[in-house]
Image 1 (tube, one colour):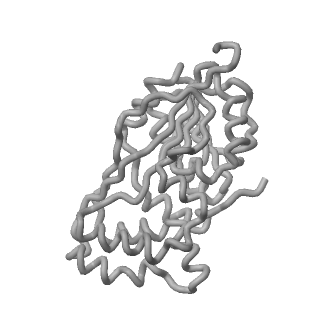
Image 2 (cartoon, rainbow, N blue to C red; image 1 turned 180 degrees about the vertical axis):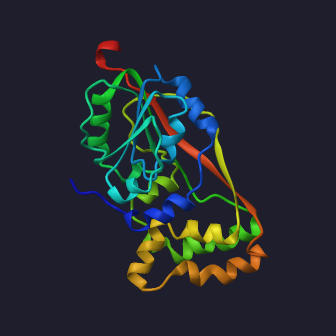
Image 3 (cartoon, rainbow, N blue to C red; image 1 turned 90 degrees about the vertical axis):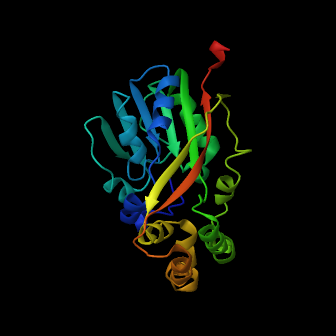
Length: 253
């Protein structure tokens, strides 16, 4: 099965430059799961969420359709990495307490993925899809950041990115929805850290392919003007958005 691979080419930098999800988020997921035996972290990428889930679950399966991404994942005694697409897995029926998808569900063939999720979840099992948008620093940096995001990159974002813009509002979700507390992520970054993060964006990669130059390099002087000393750490904050639900087969309704 083919898939839209926007990240294999930057797998190593993706592993280094992407922000980390808060520990509180994973504790919340562990609390609402019916058991803490087996979880599937789908589209695991560099394994960030899979490693965090291993603190609370006995067995974590981290899968990705990109072998290049999986090669960058950190090892852990309770995490088993595999390469397969979200829509067709080798996992057995009713074998999972929890399915997680971090910053990736918008790339899936959702009807096929949801059918697979319903096959795999135990009764009362939980599925959690989450992501984050642009984030912010302070008004001066945010103005330059927004100019880059909108005016430079707008034509180059894949259409699926619109779901991220909408914080998954309206995304189909055939599960019993659960209330989600408010969570956010924070990172203290130098300007160089921030530029490395921008280079992992699918819109930046598409811009480079079509225009033949790196837009991050082009915007760097303007960012430095508002940033100040490049080695100075500044805090970026991203609100998380999520869809979390419970699988209730017809026999339990």
